[in-house]
Image (cartoon, rainbow, N blue to C red; front, side, top):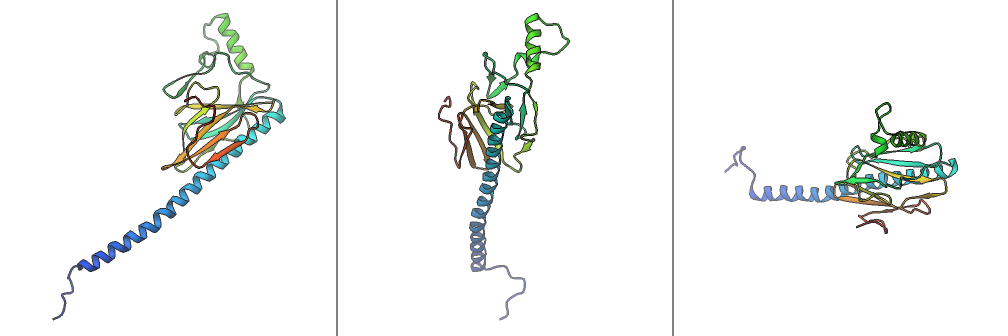
Length: 212
């Protein structure tokens, strides 16, 4: 008796098809994971190189610089001042994992202000940081993102807004931990304040001096 040409797949045929699909998925998932980790490793290495480069530029140029880490745009770039700049004794303020703009940043030229505020604004202008060519604006790209950043002068780790990593002409920077992720993978960049060296770790790790 001849089989009907429109017959459905047998249970054996369905089982074979499912087995083949499962095998192809088992091969594809590790390969995709390997590509993802390669991208994350590349972006982490690129950021580490930018930190080292800016460390050298500040020392050679004899001025203060900072690396701006934009956690919302997942981008970073360098800014430098014409001279050496000291961080404010008042320190940075933050709320809910984000930096709060300083009093000087909120002041606007021409508005009514006290003599003290006018001096603050003038001093801020003299030591203002402007974009430099040392590290052009660079996007992490793809699905690589900042998860959080902690820098020595910060009151807490930041998860949104901007974070600044400062460099001085004396050959010093700040201790910092920068975490970038892609999917479920996380890389940590740990910055040494005395040497500017960056340790890249293929998992989440905080800086030794980080506030818990």
